[in-house]
Image 1 (tube, chains in turn red, purple):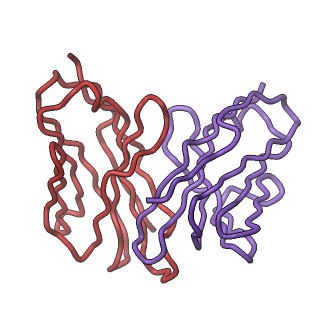
Image 2 (cartoon, rainbow over the protein chains, first blue to last red):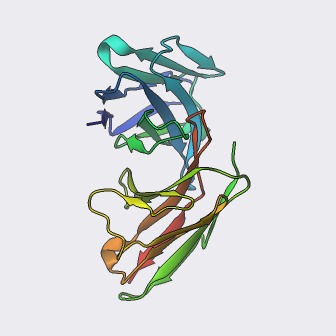
Image 3 (tube, rainbow over the protein chains, first blue to last red):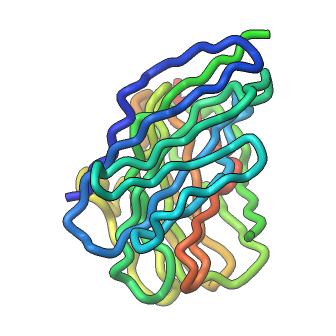
Amino acid sequence: AQKVTQAQTEISVVEKEDVTLDCVYETRDTTYYLFWYKQPPSGELVFLIRRNSFDEQNEISGRYSWNFQKSTSSFNFTITASQVVDSAVYFCALSDATDQTGANNLFFGTGTRLTVIP
Amino acid sequence: SAVISQKPSRDICQRGTSLTIQCQVDSQVTMMFWYRQQPGQSLTLIATANQGSEATYESGFVIDKFPISRPNLTFSTLTVSNMSPEDSSIYLCSVGSGGTYEQYFGPGTRLTVT
């Protein structure tokens, strides 16, 4: 069974600090996809990244970077030089990829609430 | 990415009534998903809706309580039936893009049951 653990319930940082959000997952599938979503106070879910299980390269997008390590079943998310606009709840999610018609349902972690203090 | 709209954006309903939530996508998609996010909680999948077939419900969710329609490749509805205060949640629809496994969410419907 799939499981996603985000052990950090809440994190507070001062603006311009770097912050890493942890995500550990469990799955028996050899092919799977990992996601990060941002949910700002307005409530919508903003897609940030998708990573497939065959691609362990780290990815950087502006101030965001992701570290995928299959050996530890982790997919951590780092925000560099945090800003107040980064304040949100961040969800890590896992999808199995056995259905060839498209996306599959996502198993979400419990989320990490990030507060960036000006 | 797909553009997804939901109606209504929010509603306050009385116990025992039903509410139908609409989800519209700007492109044809194979699979649509309905999620529930209870206050302060994570998202839980309610059901998967494939056009032309019956929706597949997750454990703990039943068709009588959450009937779903999927009449075409761009539209779906979720009905929350015989509502109780425990149904107060945000309901989100989500679409998958064929073959790329990316998934996007609508803005959500914030439901309060009194």
